[in-house]
Length: 86
Image 1 (tube, rainbow, N blue to C red):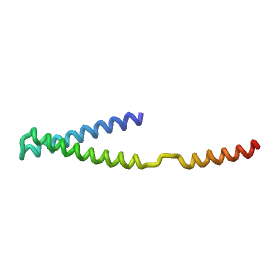
Image 2: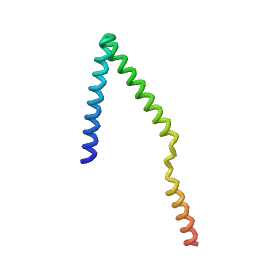
Image 3: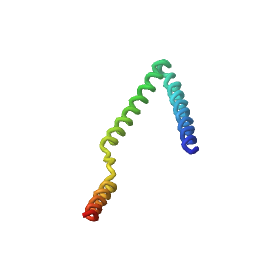
Image 4: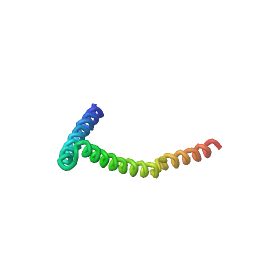
């Protein structure tokens, strides 16, 4: 149930973002034609999102996700088991 609420909240937030973007386009369209304002605002948004995604992907690639404590524990367990068997 909570996942559904989070998803619905995300959808509403996305709709709000789209409304804000439409408002920005309308404001910019007072200075330049509407079609050009749409392309300009969309392009700036796309560049910003690309930069955020690229930065996050770089950090994720450099992240070490090896469960080192679990691996060390398993090695210790294997040593203990060998001692018990011999």
